[in-house]
Length: 146
Length: 439
Image (cartoon, rainbow over all chains, first blue to last red; front, side, top):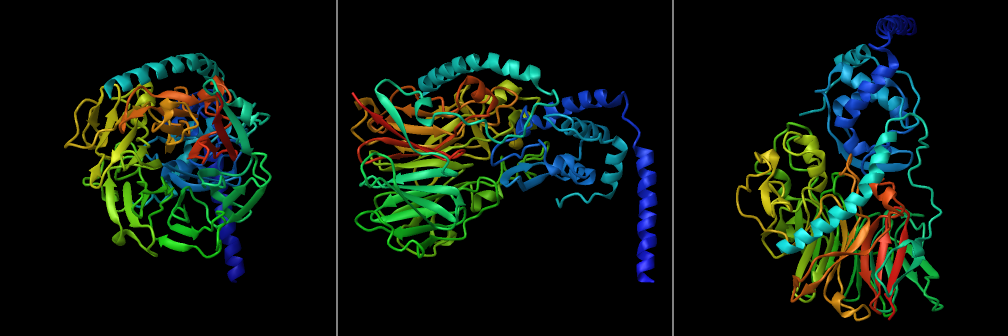
């Protein structure tokens, strides 16, 4: 019985997720190229100081955004890094100590745009992030303690 | 001091202009997808010894390469080198390098100490070394062998390490005192570190146990904050420090705050933010307060200004009086090594002057990065006596690499050998150079 109910639960979640995706999977306004262009502007203002022009970060401080599981992996994790900030991370065997401040003040569109830009720059190639996806992730996010 | 700053600033501006063209071409290609290989370090077919640019008569020799994250180093009176690694290599965080066959290169290399860290210093028959939380010491024999490498005395314990400005630099005076830096785990003591709009905490609670220098007794075990003297405060982060035997006082190089433009774009543009605040040299005495986080030194205005997190607008002065720097360098160059030169091998002008190793910037983006050099500040009677000059340059591998920050080497530690040679480490590839002078 227990096994059966978890099946039902998983099935339900799948349907929910599917519905969410089909609802939110629509391309961003103006298409991918326009989204990347907008995202670059957000990157220049919000990210470049630490992650640098080439996205390679700073040794020992600010991690690279190039071909890492954080950038190319699952979107909720990535979106939550932007929302909640981060400190102390191991990327490819190197540790990074820099403090990344949370950016909850960015709009869903800005976060979607900048992450789509990062996922399609510096040698990265990955699917776009949509504003609706960010909105859904933000809704379930627990912000860091004050 | 003002003329020193002015001259330095001008000199520095000129070198920036040279790099600016290269940076511009870098920005044009910025944003194009593809091409990036994710390389953490630039391709390395560089020649460590011939790459450095030095004044006439000086020559650099590479002692080790690809040795790990070599931070500070100490050279014994018999020429034996001890180097501290930021992260242990083969389980060892300290290496002893000895040249037994007299060819000038270390051939007997032994490691000990299972912890990473930065600080290392030789004093009175002991080797002192720090992790990011503790300071240990090891008895040395007459040949500067470590007597008991696996059983050091733990001199200091329980120092704060919160992952930001965590390295503990150490130096001793000649009266049995050990000085340790505890860096502030914050940029400017905001309620939320580095978050736009978050105000500065007043008073800054970090300063009770970090953001300063603590003095301990060099031969007493298991000391912590309560056993030491809170020697100096208002120091954001110190990596380079040295005891000046002429003035009999402690000199330090402070890493100034980051992100003036990011956090306060209405007050500072990216160009100003790349230059400000100054990276400062201080002469400390017991009770010194250098003002972090409440103030920073603006080398354009030649004065301290109130930090913006505490109501500053770039013009207002600090809320109260704080100690001023004795030398102010351009912003974000990251001074990681300081050494007062007491040798006789170098020409007379170097005697008692200060060498500073600048690790190089990251917080100048999108403006060109800078630093990655060792500079010299002449001193007379314990005071700076002229403008600073670049002594050893081109650690980066060229102007383009400097501007992008994707450099070959990053200078960190400095030490003086018994013959008067200057030793320099690089902590990105693990290089140690010996710089000598020949007439």
